[in-house]
Amino acid sequence: MRGGADMNIKLTIPERLKDLRTERGLTLEEALRLSTAAGAASVMCTGTQAASLETIQQLMEQVTYREL
Image (cartoon, rainbow, N blue to C red; front, top):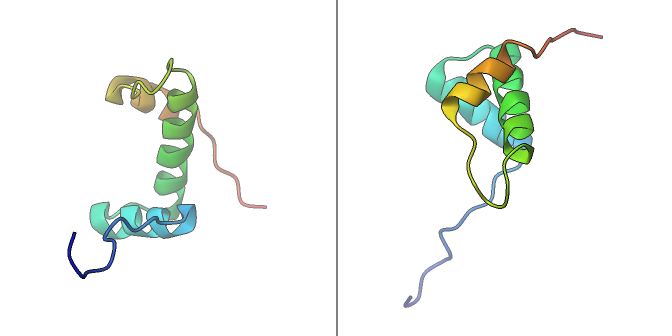
């Protein structure tokens, strides 16, 4: 690469949640449920295998959100 900045920008989790909410019109609860389910599904897979959308959706149904 000649003279340019590295375009591989890493986002923090709060930044990505904000992007998800904006891009997909999700509520805070929906974004938190989605990210929690995706994280749980990810650790259920071996190696670097990606979790299936079906697994993530099934886990989303089990995630509860409660304001403290």
